[in-house]
Amino acid sequence: MKSLKGNPDFLIIGGGIFGCAIAWNLARRSSGSVLLLERQELATATTPRAAGIIRNLNTKPGQTALKTQTKDAIGLLSEELEESLHWHQVGGLLVAESEANILHLEDLDRHAIKHGENFRWVERPEAEDLVPWLDASKANKFALLPDDGFIDPYLLATFYAKAAKKNGAVRLQTNSLRCIKYFLVLTVCSADS
Image (cartoon, rainbow, N blue to C red):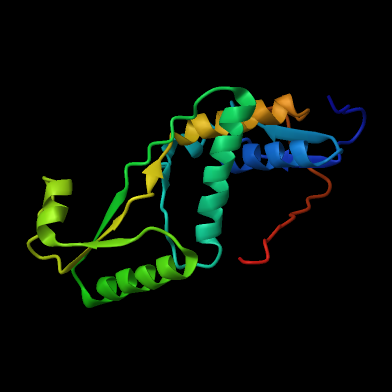
């Protein structure tokens, strides 16, 4: 376990899903000490309000890579903690009515081909079979993303926190934090983002 005598090498403010994920990554990849500050219980502010949907494809730079890294992290966390995170790969159906939405689906199709991801056009009857409550009468195009899924974001955040602690990170819950003398924001980007 890494010692936390004096000032930490890494200070993370906020124990939501991002703070816990950063703490885990720093704790397992660094020899420095990691301190995670949270004024409430971990992952109780906005994290549990998220849908937890992990979309397979996104044309925004870096988003497909982020999805891949998140799914990889889910596997690593499950192995490290010897516990299932309950990833639900249920697929996603995208429905386009307007010309702009059809163009977006066509962009996603090209993006899928470029990145070797799963994307499949489906016809209206199949879409209606997949989602019986869907009124598809006005839709013009349908796409299935079979690798889409969801996870409980609170559970994912707590797994990140447990694994961070296992790797030596320290968490401090404090309501008395009034002022931080220096605040540094570090942004790390991958080469393909």
